[in-house]
Image 1 (cartoon, helix red, strand yellow):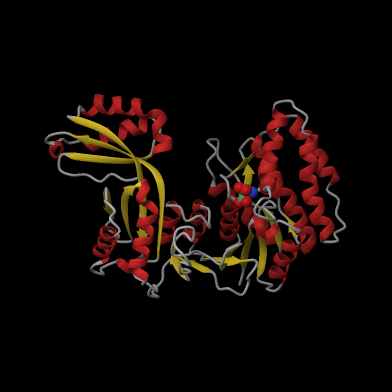
Image 2: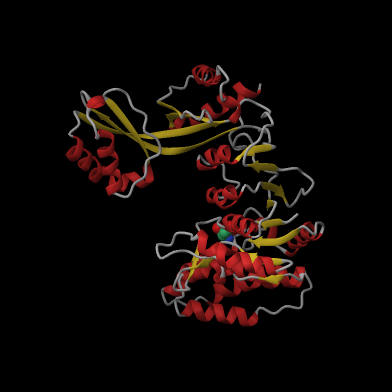
Amino acid sequence: MIKTVKFGGSSLASAEQFKKAADIVKSDPDRRFVVVSAPGKRSADDIKVTDMLYDCYKKAARGLDFNEDFKKIEARFEEIITGLNLELSLKSEFENIKDAFAHRAGSDFAASRGEYLNGLIFAAFLGFEFIDPATCIFFNENGVFDMKATDEALKPLLKNAQNAVIPGFYGAMPNFTIKTFSRGGSDVTGSIAARASESDVYENWTDVSGFLAADPRIVKNPEPIAEITYKELRELSYMGATVLHEDAIFPVRTAGIPINIKNTNKPSDCGTMIVPETTNPPKMIITGIAGKKGFSVINIEKDMMNSEIGFGRNVLRSLEKSGLSFEHMPSGIDTMSVIVNSEAFKPKQSQILEEICHRCNPDYIYVEDNLALIAVVGRGMKSVRGTAGRIFSALAHARVNIKMIDQGSSELSIIIGVNNEDFENSVRAIYEMFTL
Ligand code: ASP
């Protein structure tokens, strides 16, 4: 059995946390490949090393003195090395990084150094080999992750290593400059390493015992989710369940490797098992509820729209031209609504509306803002009567007006649009309907 384990920033924020993570690795010889984040927050008001690096580099890029800021970053790593009683000096590494900052090596390079240095420390502490992702995780010219080139480079490295530590979050562009994934991207590296090492499981160690059926800031003590399929999780994480980076699913999914979310501070908790498929019935009909505020709806009306061939394509081409993706597109016979993320849409609104008018000549077009979307997700709803009915009656009792409904034929999720102000109430009402 081979396991790839990834430790998040809070699991490696201090020497004490490092020791817990090392105990976890050492307690199971199958845990051969270890992916690390940069040191995260030691307490609620602490600053993540990645954020310190971004800020420090901003100064360097403007030609300002960044020595004081850099010293604070050095201190974070020194504190860990001292706390672990390690014979390791990062002095020359610090000098090289400072030099690269002064020569404007780029903010991706800067941010990646948190993972790089933490990887060096953890490799030394565990006595594992260190593999620098700059040599084996690749992006293409457009900055898109290149799975084929990565597999080719990383697979032989992992095959030849008994154990290794791999920093998360970054890789290299074809011209060898450093590029990072988006924030939280060490989860993606973990998934890539699990795939390349042909691991049997990808353990993702964090500071919570897995996914909960709803956001605990909205619902009191929501049920933990013991098992969830990739597809269900994709729906939930896209809509705001944030334990795992949403792109972390793809590399392991195609390889059929399950992900186990575990808690470094409570290692005996089972956590959440994310699996390709399962025949186990879910505990409740719904697996989880997630949602987000901040969507806008472009409403388009035109008589005889239903018979106008190419109408939908022309609407979507107008969005495509402005580089905007859409979330949902519920439609009636002579009406079509396109739901988009407000933040991305607003700066391009007038351009897009003009384009739609030009291409489609609608009778009426208007925009509504302040829409929140809620995804009620569960493999258990397939072919079960009454799920939608229960959701709607829960919302009716909570006096919430439903603005939009969307259910795909996979019957895996029901998406509901409500006003931003009704968001929290709606989530609570739906959750209670399925749990009480
Ligand atoms: N350190 C990076 C961040 O804070 C990546 C990660 O931790 O996954 O976003």
